[in-house]
Length: 533
Image (cartoon, rainbow, N blue to C red; front, side, top):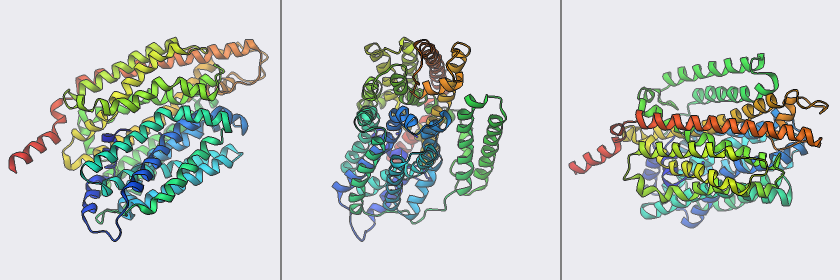
C-alpha cells in the first residue's frame, strides 16, 4: 500500500515521466512571491511521510479486533488492506503529474486532508463496507503525499541542506516501518482498534498547521495527466486483487474468479494500447525491451514481496493462534523491521564500491536463508525468531536504495524519471499483489489442512481458515483450535518455502542477467561531461 532511504526518496520523486527533482530545482532558482520556511517545511513533509508506512502496519495489527468489532466477513476484512494498496499503486504517477501541473504544496495539502478525513471516517465507522471505501480513498491521498512531499524538498532546499532534508525524509519512512507495528500494538491495547486511525488524524493536523509555511512550486511545462493509462491500470490491478480475495471463498475455478481474471487481462491489454498511443505515457513500454531493465524493475517482487507478507500476516498469526497481545506482536517484528531503518544509509558507501548486481543478488540470498530459517515458527515462538527475522530484514534493508539506484542507472539520464516512476509503481503494485495473494493462499491452504478434521465446529473449513489468517479465532473447543493452529502454521511454512524459492530464483536471475555495462549510463554521462568541461 504499501515505502525508504534518502536515495530511494530522491528517485521516487521522478515518477511523472519527467524528473520531478530536476523540475523542482528549476523552480527553486526562480523568484517566488513568498519564500517558505525551512524548519516547518522539513517537519511537515517528514511527518506526512511517516503516515504512509503507519497506514500499512497499523491496520495490519488492528485488523483482528477491527474485524471482530464490526462483524466483518473474511473477504470484506481483507479489503481493509487491499483497497488502500490498490489505489495507492494505481494513482502514484497520476498524483505526481497533478503536483507538477497544479503545485506541489497544493497536492500535498489535499493529500493530507484526504488522508486525514478517511482516517477519521474509518475510526468512526461501524460498517466494514464504509471502512473499505474509506481506505480506498485514503490510498489516493497517500499517493499525493508521497509524490508531492519529496518534490517540495527538491524545491525548498539546495546543496547540503537538501541532502540533510532527504536524509530526514528517508529516516521518516524507516521509522514508520520499523516502529509502526510496536506503536500500533500499544495503541490497540490502550485505546482499541480505532486508535490506529485517530493517530493519523492527530499527526495530519500537525502537518496541516505547518503546510502554509511551505513555498509553492510547479512545472510550467507539465503536460496532461494520462487518464486513460490511470483508469485501465487501476481497473486491472483491482481485478487482480479481487481474484485473490474471492478465490478462497468461491473456489479458484469459480465464475467470479475466472471473470475477474479475464477482466484483469483485458484491462491490462487496454492499458498497453493506451500507453502506446499517448504522447507522454505513464509507462514507456519501449524500456521493457532491455533484459537488464526488466530484471531491475521486477526486483520488488523478489525483495519486498516476502517482507510485506511477513509485515502484514505475522502480527495476525501472533495475536490469533499465538494468543499474544497486540503490543507483543509488534515487538516480535522488531528484528525484521529495524534493519530497514538502519542498513540503507549504513551501506551507502559499500554500494559505490561493489557491483550492484552482486549486492542485489546477496540481498536475495539473505532473504532465502531467512525464509527457510522461519520454518522454526510455532504459535509459542519468541526469542527463536530473532535470528531468522534479523537475517530476512537484513536482506531487505540492504537492498533498499540500491534497487532505486539500479533502476535509474539502467537508462540514459534523460530517461531516469520515467525509469524511477515505473520502478516505484512496480514496487507498490508488488506489495499490493503480495498482500492479496498471500491472504488467499494462506486461507486456501489452511482450509485444505483442516477440511474434515473439525466435525461439530458449526462453521466451514474456509470460514475457520479465513478467521485464523486474520488473527481471530472464535471460542471453540481445544481440539478444534489445535487443528486450525496446526493448519495455519503448516500454511505459513509452505509460504516460507515458496518465498525462499522466489528469492533464490531472483538472486540467480539478477546475478546472471544484469550486465554491469548496462548500469553505466549515468556514470558514462558524468565522465563525458567532465571531459568536455
